[in-house]
Every structure is written in C-alpha cells, then in structure tokens.
Image (cartoon, rainbow, N blue to C red; front, side, top):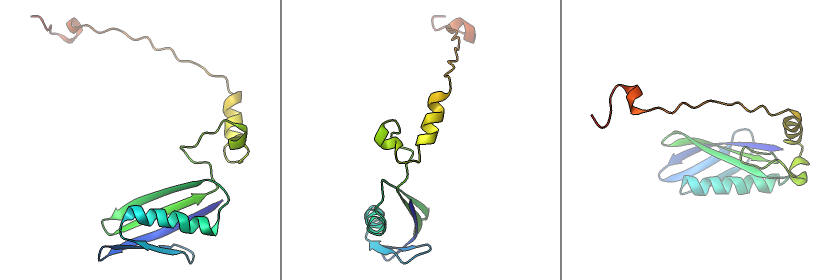
Length: 122
C-alpha cells in the first residue's frame, strides 16, 4: 500500500504540487486537473491496487492532496471473494459476519395535531 501526500499551492492561476516527503511533482491550471495528474503520478510510482484520493483546500491558494494506492476505501464494496482477498477488509468483514444482528424495535407513536396544543381546523 502506498500513501502519497502532496502540498499544493496556487500562484498566478497555476496550481503546483510537491510530495511531502518525496520527489514527485505536478502542476495544472485547476484543482480538478491537478488531482487527476497527482493520481496518475502516484500510480506511475506504485500500481499495486485500487486508488483512493482526496483534495482539501486549506486556504484559497493552498491545499493538501492525498493519494492512497492498494487500500480498501470507504466507498468500496467488501463482500466478494476478490474484494476480501485484498486483506484490508477481510478481517472486518469476517468479524461482522460472525456477530449476531440485534434488531432494535422502536415504537413510533402517531402524533395528532391535538397533541401540539392547536388544531388546524379551529
């Protein structure tokens, strides 16, 4: 699993990014294009699995971008044999399957307009 963190800055309408602890760099005219380029740059360095990326503005002219390669992310499906073999989500999925599910029953009380102290038809 590879984790790539980039410090991004905007100057004169151009966004540039440098890896926090590394040699990777990229630049683009928009944050969207920059994030796409950073994902491609990270994939060229480590292409061992799925990709998860995030881009967070800190100020209007600075941001942090993180690219994670080879991890089961929050939006991924962990259920089939192929997804479980990645290792990241398999123990959690197995533990969740073993726990008995307890359904909580909540009794919903139907409220009428009389309970609120006024009526629509008064």
